[in-house]
Length: 437
Image (cartoon, helix red, strand yellow):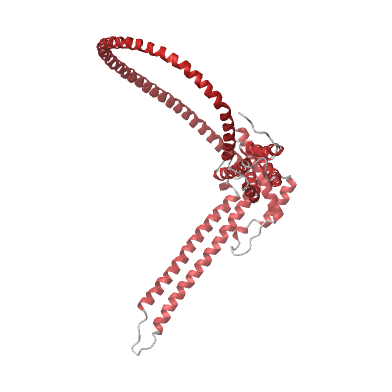
């Protein structure tokens, strides 16, 4: 096939770097990404369409007459703003690079569609080139083909005559073979029918036998599997019962040891509340709590009685006098009884508050007292005596004070030191118990 001569303009077009840029961009955008979503695929599909459009526009340009300056500008823009983003995408596989590349390509869409006016569809351009090449080749080969056809026609006429003679001979042989084949086919059909019937009977008997054996084997396998399953369940249940009994024994031993260690620790630090000063505080606080609840319920009863009395008087009203005046004795009686109920409600409420304040104060003393022994035990004898003297002055006898008065409390420094020391002592004791266990 004859090739057209390549001009210096078409050679320059074929070597333009825009072709290499499009190839590199296709390779970068075709990298595989494991984790994608609809937005990611939409960005990549749109960018593939943009690059495909640019490739089609460039491919449709006339190599001898194309806008080189516009093509250079598009190459510079896409190389700096699109190809670099795609190279980063091929390494990082992030949708951010695809978005940036799409935005940069969009900003240069007018320049691409300006040169698209000079571009022809690639199929049409290729069709024209192919038609030109085909016409040149056809013109060159038609004469030789005509001569060769004439020679072959002469040769084929002689061969056709020889073939006609052979065809007549073969026709006679075919007629004889046809008659013989009909006879053989009839014999074969009879033999095949007989053998087919025999095979069908044998196959039916064999199939019945196979189904019978399969059913027997299947039943045996099911029974064997069921027995194995029951044996395994029984074995596992026995192992579970044994393990569970061992676990219960271990748990009981551990519970006894923990309970013994707990009692030992509490006796070690003198924290058994029923036998210490703290126990007195706890008992007093419980008594105050019960008293507070009693007076609170009494206050509620008084308020309910007041409400019921007032509702009764409002519904029934006051008896009117014969002269139509105000029944002052009945009004004074109703007001007095209401005032008595309200006074009783106020008194019981104050008593409940007093006992509740005493309960809170005693619970605070119990907590502080309970933390004293482990704290004092960690100090020297001299410091213990000094602290005990100060505590006697500040704490003993405070539980009998009025709940409405301000309680004497430890200063912030002493309380912080007390809490820190108690925390360290209890942590050390728990660590020793855990290590021993």
